Length: 257
Image (cartoon, rainbow, N blue to C red; front, top):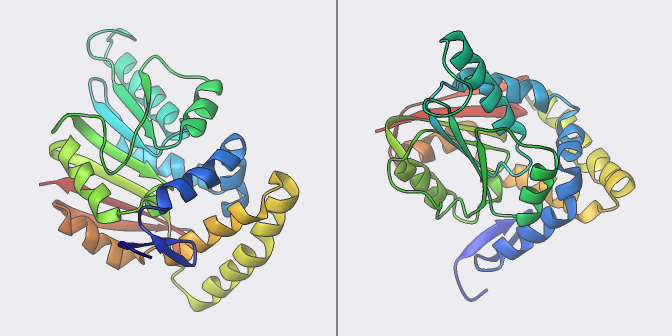
């Protein structure tokens, strides 16, 4: 390596190489991305996402940035929830007062796969980098990233960028695979992750290597408390985390200072 190092699964690579390597993985799994999350979480990711959406509590008139949101799975939840809130207030479905949800993903194949699944009137799509979002300063009430932060080359830079685009007091939510809280659960999860998921990936997706990377990337990601400290360092207050399924995943939240 000639420059700064970055992690790619269990490998350390030159930071300049990681974006292309990650793009290659998601180019290959884009059409099966939601299936991939089903395989990696046993389908429980749908319940985790519902819990994140409930915590966000999208409201009419809010601008919400859904980063690494290529399939639009989370954004559709937000759009429908904000629309229901708007109807309860007696407001129109579209026009002034509607929520605005920007789906940003580094991978064009993911964006294409998401658009093919359908959109909502409140949603707009863009290819963009979590480390340099194509959005102005202090432009959003909320920033959400689900199962994407661990694939970013420079995580602190992405967190600072999240702070940049949020208005003061804006809400930060990050859902990511994390560390099981007991040794027994960790051992069971390791066995499932390293023995079962790559094999299923090979048989169902025809790509063992991509699924092996995704499993390894989870293990290289910081634990809950370490990641909470990184969020605070990026300029967020009231940083908290909630473990899901014994820490298999965790939701980290904060407020832009």
